[in-house]
Length: 157
Image 1 (cartoon, rainbow, N blue to C red):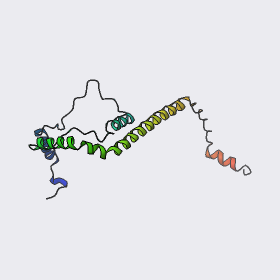
Image 2 (image 1 turned 90 degrees about the vertical axis):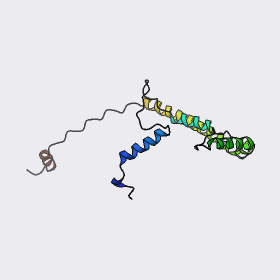
Image 3 (image 1 turned 180 degrees about the vertical axis):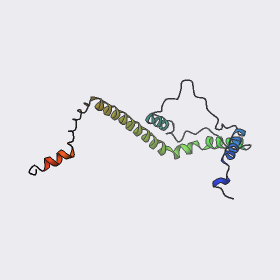
Image 4 (image 1 turned 45 degrees about the vertical axis):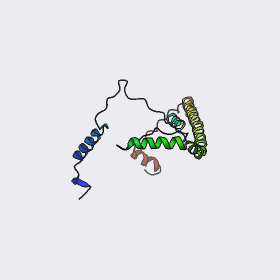
């Protein structure tokens, strides 16, 4: 059985995948409504990364418990909750140095981001203050080839 080439009907495969997604309650590739205000504004990567670093810098703060399991999922969630309640002191002790390191990384990123913003503003100010380049002088009109030959050989005639 070949897995590449024409043996795989692409449209049928996509339809089957979308059907499986819909049965699980997940969205498929149906068109999405555009908000009335238009496209969302562009995200500033520096601010976004700084916010993400600040939000996730403490490794001792647990993520919300979740499981992908079906029927036994509730039992797994209870086990996770019990583990966190009994072992949080050890988790905090183990990840204390990582928390301090993450704080330093977050602070360093904030300083570097501020420096990048300052340098961008300075570059823009320098570009705005820069005088426009002088108009280029027009190139001399080329002399026709017949006149060039005559100019090169003045003694012949």
